[in-house]
Amino acid sequence: MNLSTTIAGVTFPTCFMNAAGACCVTQEELEALGESHAGAIVTKSMTPQPREGNPGPRYHSFPGGSINSMGLPNLGYPAYAKLIPELRRFGKPIVASIAGLNPQDFLEAAKAIELAKPDLVEVNLSCPNLPGEPQIAYDIEASRRILLELQECLTIPMGVKLPPYFDPVHHEAMAGMLEGVNVSFLSLINSVGNGLVIDPESETVVIKPKGGFGGIGGTIIKPVALANVRAFWKLFQGRMPIIGVGGVVTGTDAFEHLLCGASAVQVGTTLVEEGLTAFERLEKELSEVLTKKGYASVDDCRGRLKEL
Ligand code: RRO
Image (cartoon, rainbow, N blue to C red; front, side, top):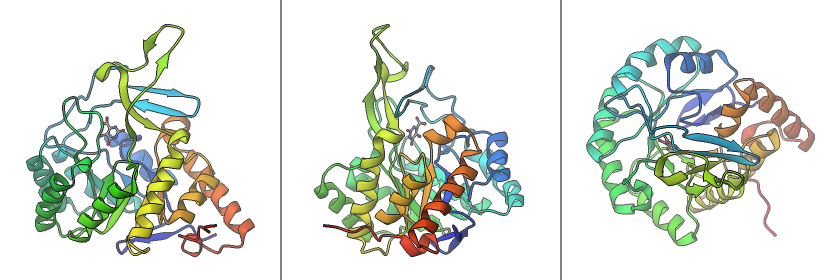
């Protein structure tokens, strides 16, 4: 089965890759992704300075998903800029995720990472876990300003990682803004921000930062992820490549993202819980689903969701 896919002119050997944040902070983790069946190596979102992140416990899984408030732990962009050329030896696309606490951080990271020549840059406008910092992509004008500045200093295709939106008015507002900037793909969605998971037995929250509030991932966010993939696919009439993220546990989950219009999928909670062998399993399961359904490739089924 042909599971390869092309996004912004970059061909991925398979449509599965890690979600930024999942198993991709350290050199060892990035190399392990290189050696795995992942179709790409996506870095942790990087900032100018190395960051320890929030105090722990800061990740917790539960039946149906996970909650995290990692707080952007990363090695800092100089370390990733040095690592990226070394990761080339794995022969798969490299996606550099950039983030920041202010617009200047994004620009600085973009300029430095451009020189390391990743294949794509994913601009994370949706981290929900920085105490006191709003998710940028819930502010259309702030997002526009950052993307307009970034497009001036990047020659590598740039995509945007968005948070979930829950109303068509917000999908339309974001899509309308994106029409006016040079964005080559969308990654949809980041974790559902500021959820709360509690332990009724001990009567406590399960993670420490922000009083227990954190980003929700995994199976329980799949309907929200699919809705966002579908909404943006339709708003761009299938012309904007989308990487679907959220609730990919099985090959069928990936198939659902493809039907909604995704060209590839990222795996977060499942990767953290199951480890790197998840990629091989997902490949096998998606191949079986596509074969059973009579599709010849990822391209063949993309966006083909039927409406009633
Ligand atoms: O590091 C995090 O806490 C984090 C980030 Br940057 C993000 O974009 N999404 C998420 O769920 N956690």
